[in-house]
Image 1 (tube, one colour):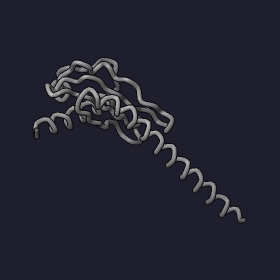
Image 2 (cartoon, helix red, strand yellow):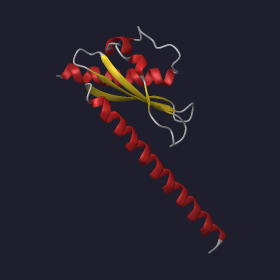
Image 3 (cartoon, helix red, strand yellow):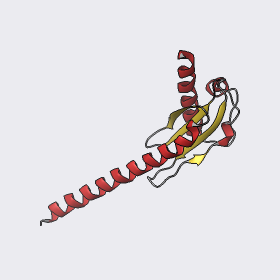
Image 4 (tube, rainbow, N blue to C red):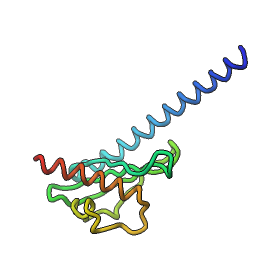
Amino acid sequence: MTYLTKLFVIIAFMWASQLALAYMQAKNFQKDIKRLRKMGMVATGMGGKRYRGGRAFVALAADENNIVQDGLVLRGFTVFTKSKPLPKYKGFSLDEIISGTRVVEGEPQKVMDAAKHAAQLLQDHYSKI
């Protein structure tokens, strides 16, 4: 086996490992979101840039009165990042999150953008019903 062939085999193995770990992370996040579905309609929003500070994913559960019941956040640079509870948005209305009238102090901008995106998706859904 030549040096170049070994290099391609190593790269292919690393790429396959990355895909497998990303798949496992997504499955774990979906499992965590299942818990939120018991509290109401759930939407997941994305915020942040891919290569500038990373992305954040926020899942919000809202009831039929457009009040957030609970949330999850997934943020980090590696595939080993796990979702964490996001209780700071509990009790907020979707309109407050979208308009920015109530802001959660201490949260990075990418998390607030992801929450705004999720709230917009929920509001769009409820307006269709």
